[in-house]
Image 1 (cartoon, helix red, strand yellow):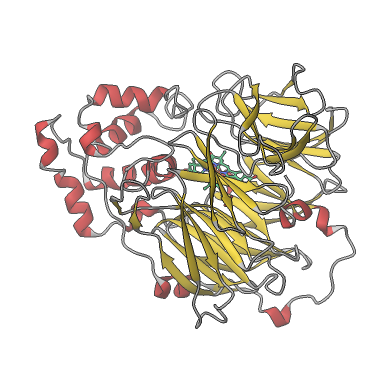
Image 2 (cartoon, helix red, strand yellow):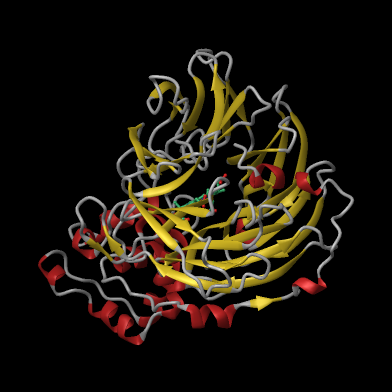
Length: 528
Ligand code: DHE
């Protein structure tokens, strides 16, 4: 695995060691040996860049460029790195992820000018592209099993993805997918499952193959979090898109081979202050069911891009981009139940931005709570307000419920708020369920507890279910009568809960740090 930190140019490394002249008036710029710089850059990439940015301009986490960090003593920075903050930063030392020496080194590193990694363009991507199984050599018949109820499960720290049969609960295949896979998405037919890793590697799994295997892979960037596949009629399984954190760009690939055919930069200006930003990262991507386009959250500039692929052809055609001013810093998001409206979290402004894909405009910016983080959110019918969508928050224990029923005056306002035990990452329900499940993963004391609300008793006290390990991310089976949750630990497991009784009905063990899991049918149809 080649990490971001290992590809520093000599010029960048020289700059890093020298520090910055403008910072000299603050704390003195510390020094690190070349080996320490390399190790620090690797740790920074693994632990910090996702929230603070490669160039440290801030997004989910604050700006930690030298102009800011040199105002703090090394002792203060070490304390933050060791203990974390109430704002949601993990205590890397306290949690056993960094030792004392690494903490000291990293405190110095963040006071030194950040390295600028080199670009990663089409020639590099093409070179990294591997077609393991050509289309002609793949099965032409679907398997007998109920493969639409398969789950893709990420084993993050093992660099693996497992496919688990949702009916039998048996692990049917485990594949090496690369460093810290972040999410999985399904092709429109459901046959292919795509993974994207923090190292920018996209992989493609064929669920019809026996054994299920990786049929293609390509490194689209050095650092990435999002991937999706074209879903509009006539374009099913035709294109895959992945978004880069570094370089800040998106890449469109052929859906059956992952051959990269188009790369487009997102570098530009913030939507409001119109200030140049060198690192506008691509966060969530969703595929429209009603138009030939992808929707992309461009985090730092606050734009939602509607990327129309209908004239792209084999890559020799072009894409058309509609750029909608939304809010900053855009992170995750999902569809409302009609799949006309895209709701995106702008976590620096405590806002959910709503994009209308028919009128192609921003409909509302709704202030919810501290750092909304919906995952893709959850849709249900509230007994009083009709169709609603909900988000949880990184910065406080709060579920904000937004009306999506455009026939009502309350549309695009927060119609209910539920108090949660802790800061949360994900919320989930299913059209066949009357439960809404929330984790409390990033709360220091409640991380092992799930909170379950009853849709039909919205004012009733929720049930709390506590496990023996940190619990993260929920996903329903195809029928909507089971909820799968991850016990996020080196010796981790998937716990399958009966949605009606809320009791454990199966446990799939032997999984290393399972995080996200994605049911084929629900992912194809964006059911959440
Ligand atoms: Fe995620 C979704 C980015 C930390 C597990 N995460 C997303 C998405 C983005 C993102 C942009 C939306 C993708 C989409 O829908 O197209 N996540 C980031 C980060 O930048 C951040 C804050 C820090 C980092 O360095 O990665 C981060 N995420 C985490 C975690 O610590 C989690 C819990 C475990 C992990 O993998 O490191 C985690 N993120 C997930 C999961 C989803 C996700 C499981 C998909 C949720 C879904 O149901 O769609």
